[in-house]
Image (cartoon, rainbow, N blue to C red; front, top):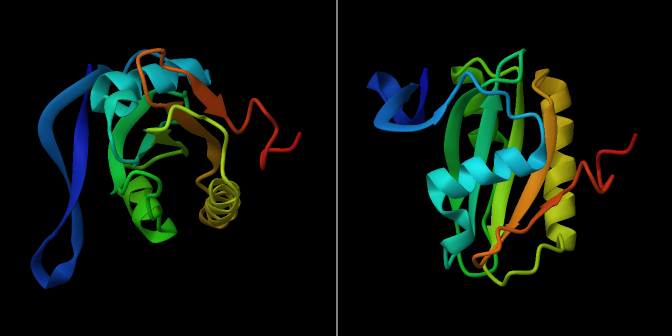
Length: 161
């Protein structure tokens, strides 16, 4: 089973709807249960490690941990990308996500999260609790060919045990 990339469009009366772009990105039967696997699939699908500007992607999962959709949430500048909880969760709701993981790149190659990265992650995590669509992790992918990543969950930042 192939998973499509999705975009949200406005339909009649400005009501959003989800539509596949026709671009198939991954095999959805595979479990993506660790940050490295999720980072790899987003690098493959979006070439995040090669982008000169920051982009943010949301990976949406079903109850079994299978990937059900990938969404580009934001495309920013060389050092920032604006995120909106509304933009994230409208997509999560439309695809029936059980939980989500956010990923964004740092073109500089440094995966150290900024204070703003931490603040945004906390805000999205709290919104996910309210929506009953938990944010399982936020992964930062380094620019460059080594495909380094930083996982907020692995480092116990925001996701305290």
